[in-house]
Length: 285
Image (cartoon, rainbow, N blue to C red; front, side, top):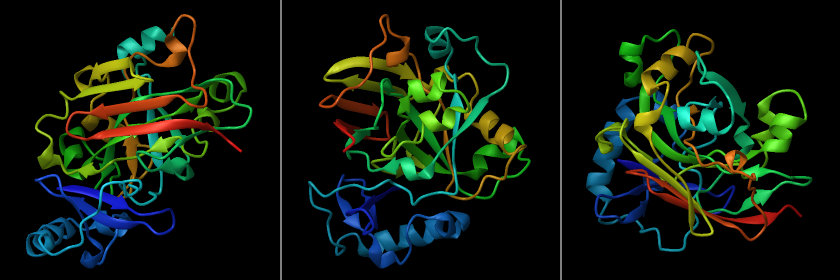
């Protein structure tokens, strides 16, 4: 299944993208895609039954309707740094021996086609196409062998970063990662059965029509089972939590000279099986 959300901020509703590409409102199911929904695996069976019974009569989401973040605000967004060897190389870093962990504020979440708001005093706003993993059941001290049983699905995420805030102003990376609009999520969450091979997905990003990133999840240094197991040794992952698994080469920071986003720039990105996003950069008022 492909789960989405739609509507204006503070008035967002659950929806589904059907196999024929139609998008329907799923408010009649009675639950949003939040921690309580993901915590009970039986909810997916209930949702399938609801869709089979109601797909032909449910209200269709019309083209042009705003898509919201594909999941409700989770308890946390956990990000993995330098998880592609080519990205580590372009930034001048040594590939890590253990996953590099940082957090992104959940208030950064936004819809897949909402504007990118360049924050005040920004000098170096950058892009990062990433594969997001949504947790489906509580994970604490999980083995790698059992890790994928804790996955509810996968999403497309653009892990925007303000490199001046992140690197040059001291402290932790989180303050360069958490500005409003820095976490577009969606257009939908795809359940694992929708993805034939999560380790072979092409991922790409363009700025003003020019390809900047063209990578593949086969090049992840730490694969998804490793990441879930590793993180669960340090924190409990709750249903609905998002793990963003890292970005391939081609970020603005790694260019010579570096290139960063300005108001008016258009950013487009996608991952096989997970749809596409489009953001236009605007200045923060």
